[in-house]
Amino acid sequence: MRVFLTVFLTIWSGAAVAETDPAQLFAQSCGRCHRDAERMVAKIDWTADNQTPEARRDWFDGFMVRHHSPDPDSRAAIAEWLAGIAS
Image 1 (cartoon, helix red, strand yellow):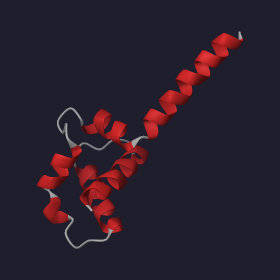
Image 2 (image 1 turned 30 degrees about the vertical axis):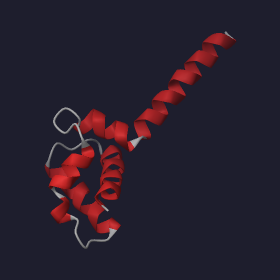
Image 3 (image 1 turned 90 degrees about the horizontal axis):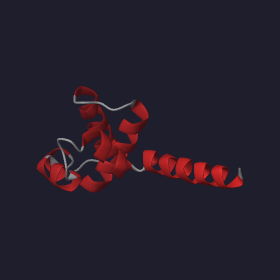
């Protein structure tokens, strides 16, 4: 029973970490069409020039709402991560 519980908790905690990793979320939600986040951001970098990190995050979040939007929590994590890449 302990072995089962240990294996279950290990797998479950690994899945929880993967779900909150923005790079993983990007790969799961956006990776089918956008394989390289840095390259994608470089193509739209003009939108992030002279903006605060918060403004970049809001721009990415708003764009994803109109694009193929993942759930709000995933979208927020991805937007924050992409804004960091854009800075």
